[in-house]
Image 1 (tube, helix red, strand yellow):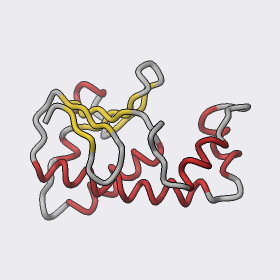
Image 2: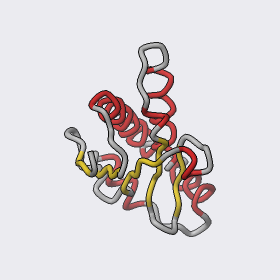
Image 3: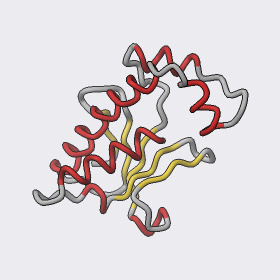
Image 4: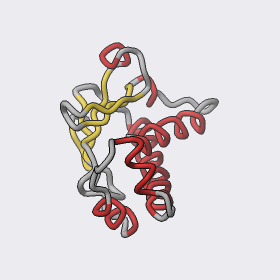
Length: 129
């Protein structure tokens, strides 16, 4: 896969690496879970304060709260899949320079033993992105 819109949402995932169907399924599952997490987060009374801690004082976040509460993630950053070495060995990262979330291809390697752990990791990275 080079580029795809995931089927249950309007997220754009791009990769110059080949993603196996199981990897794409795991990514989609994690994104769906993270979407619920973000909706819950947007409903918290201290949402604005937490966003200021993450993104700086005075950041405009009400449009995100409104969008996330209604399930609209159209303004969410594109997701890029990279080799872990390309993102300094981490599982995932966000950069303002490209306004992209990067996930490690290795993280998406799916095995039965660790699938749920990896889903939680992808979900956590995306939720914090």
